Length: 263
Image (cartoon, rainbow, N blue to C red; front, side, top):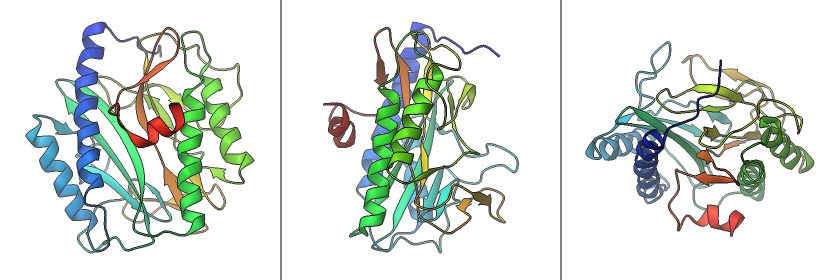
């Protein structure tokens, strides 16, 4: 299946969707603290998205249908954690929050792993290397680059630091559908794979474990957990391919993490 090149109109709408999502993350960052439940966080996310005349991309998605507006995954949970009233954050946790926004027919997708209070050096280093791998990956993006250039840079960053990459789940194209071509693995060989063209839109999302790469899906049929119970982190943005590089759509200009790595 061909990778869709978006029209100027489609890109304009996707940027609006992405701006809503960036705002959602700004608001979520204000409530990440000891004692808050993942259910409370999810309700806040739903309420903000609704007020912005949008819909949560994840609610009702898949089979079985995902039951919440966001995926909230704590510590050894990699992705797709279901928000629950009894799941409360505590100091020292890391928590990955993955959110999609559907606005006027188009999706945006972003994930961020938060540090709750004072976390261990192991946890902090993991979060940092996950972000670094993402940015080293997207620095490869431009018209004419290969998809494998992104995957290779992510893999080299993570593995050279002693971490492992989740293999069963990967990034993806995005647009009118939440998941479009191409599939974007976090491991690969530079100079291989489909050629990127300007106005393609990609969701790049490294998922990195302290321990081994192996994961399993828990009994709720959604939550992905590291097999060895080691910590896992996740970082994602929706990214537009441009003639000479890329544009991160799901972040505001003052985003501290983006500026740390790109400015």
